[in-house]
Image (tube, rainbow, N blue to C red; front, side, top):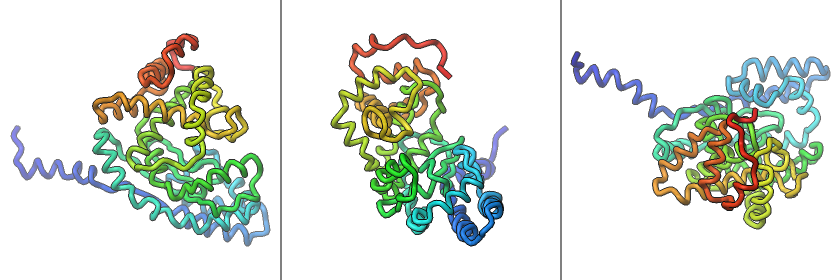
Length: 333
């Protein structure tokens, strides 16, 4: 059957419109949070404060807020407790959370560059919502979930009321001015929506995070001003030696999502190790687009695939393979 040109164009238009549609950035949960916050502070009854959070913030919240709560296990009671416990923190961060749209101003340009570099890019939504200090960014499926109270912060944020070790960790984090680096943060999380999930070894988690760091830097032209980058550059041999010893284990405490109470005295050195592996891998690729695709599409749940990728990067010395036990056929889960 032969189709007429007008009919062909009519059939193609929805797909063209979909491809060109801007990425949805939702920020309405932020305003809803602050209206709820004011109401909670004015309410003397503890049970009613929790009910206010549920009724005014959570129940009418966006799908992204509900996803953020699911991923980070936030509850109405936890929100209500934090609102009362940290008044100086909330007062200092409140004006900064109004910057979500401004901080995402380069998103469409950055995603256009991402699509040019990686044509298989799948669409994802982005939601900014206020959490309770357990993430500046995470994902669930094709949703990028940004914790506005962290991601939009800067050195003016008052952390004096927070308990240790959270206080010290977030002092370093806010001093790195994450709000000024929001474009990179959005892209890091967007990369995660394109990658496969993983459970298993330190190597698997570190490489997944490092690839996201590398691609986000490549697209945004920026790197977070977090101290593990400077630390890593000055202690790479030490990091590499410990990584070889621990990479096949599933204990992440020294490396990822942690505070500085580890042998390095530095948080999140696993991001640096993964970033350097991705960086060295890409130095060897004659075709950048093909190399980026291989990194993003790596089966991070397969320890042998990740080990082969690390070996191909050349970041570990050749003799390192002999220092590690043979991996099983299936991922450690």
